[in-house]
Image (cartoon, rainbow, N blue to C red):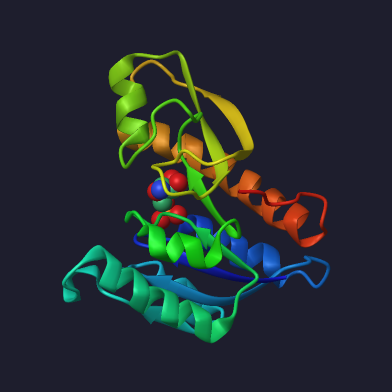
Length: 192
Ligand code: GRF
C-alpha cells in the first residue's frame, strides 16, 4: 500500500509512520509528504529520503484552488491512501471527492467529542476527566467521518494544553500505525 502524508506542523505522527514503515514487514510504504506551509515536519521526509512538496495555502485565491493544486501534487504519486496527520487545514470537498474514502485523519480527542482545530484545548476547558485520540475517515465535514480507531486518555490535575497533547500524541501514533497496517492488509475496509 502506498501512502502520502499531509502535515502542517512538527510531524511527530509522520515520523512515527516513517519509522514503522522502515521495517520490511510493514505492509505500507510512505511515498510522499506534503504540507500547506513550510512545516518543520518536512525535515522528517528529508531524513528518510521521501519526496516532499509544499502547497502554501496563502498563495492561492481560494480553498478550492489550493485544494486542486494539492490534489495535483498528490496525483503525481498516485497514493493508495492519504493520511492527514497534523494538517491544520480543512480540505475542500473537491479534493475529498478525489480521494474519498481513502483519506484518513488523526485527531487528539475522543470523537465525536471536541472536533475541530482545538480538540485538546476544548477538552481541557470543558473540565472532562478523560479525553482521547481518534483515527477517522475524512469526509466533507469537520472530523465527522466514520471512526476507525479511538482510545480514552485521562486528563490529569494541572494538565496544560501541551502536557495533555503530549500524552495524547503517542496514543495517536500507535492507533495510526495500526490503522494503516490494517488497511494495507485488507483487514480494515474503508467506506464512505
Ligand atoms: C496531532 O495531535 C494531530 O492529531 C493534530 O495536530 C497534532 C499534530 O502533531 N491535528 P504533529 O505535527 O504530528 O507533531
